[in-house]
Length: 342
Image 1 (tube, rainbow, N blue to C red):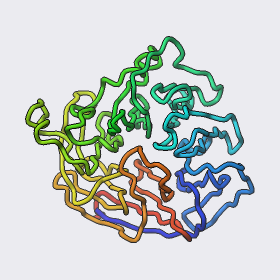
Image 2: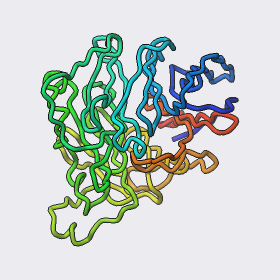
Image 3: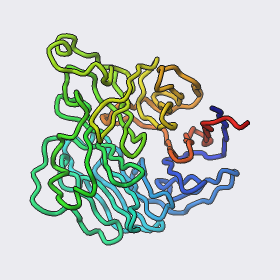
Image 4: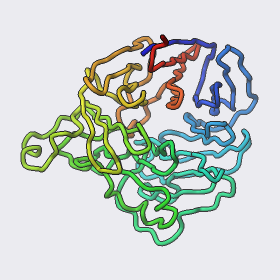
């Protein structure tokens, strides 16, 4: 495994998303940072304190939002399409639930919670048509950090239940479009995910189309609860990382690194980048830290519950094994090559 690092000028960056081989700050009006150091300025000011963004890989569609607010803004080609909203209920506590992705037939879809904190809806970005209408009776779950897998057929929600307790649940997107009530059930979860006596499932990301990386919090397990339940020996541990197969509903592996994982980015099937405090590459076989960049501040987010914590802009590119972090005066891009050249 090899690492290369690139620093490009960029002061007062408010958000970052990848658009091909460039980085875009949508919150600052769509300023574009090229990896050769060129910058395309923007003269757009949104007149609202958005502080985060997500976008399609080609940058055609983007969503600005306030992490712990109720307001979002959908853009197409940098122009406003419509405003988005979520429930006020505890919105000041946890991260806005939204993601946007392109499907095989060419449509762009948005998953968010415009009606209730516990109800996920899927919309067509172009037309605004709600694709998940019908009789809905959502179970009680605070959806957050929605993420679609690479194939575009599964959705995860790394949110929380009242205690508060961080948990993760999973949905089949095709089933949800056929029967929207599928999104109301939070029964599809890893063993122990909703059990407050076991490790807290604080973060998650797709490792493959069928497997996820689960990250634990610092909350310790209750030894009595562990002994009295049928908790599997192979499971997520406090402050650990587990690989979980959504299809077989089984754990594949579990390790406990030397620090909390926080937000994660997979590096193939044997390593991951963990972003708690600063980026570091962790082995999923041993938990050993292979590399770290302590000079890069990536914040202390562990779960969806962040209150008013300000997080440094971070852009993750899973397909190309790279990430970008914005500092006060520049943007640092770290590229990871999984196999050394001969």
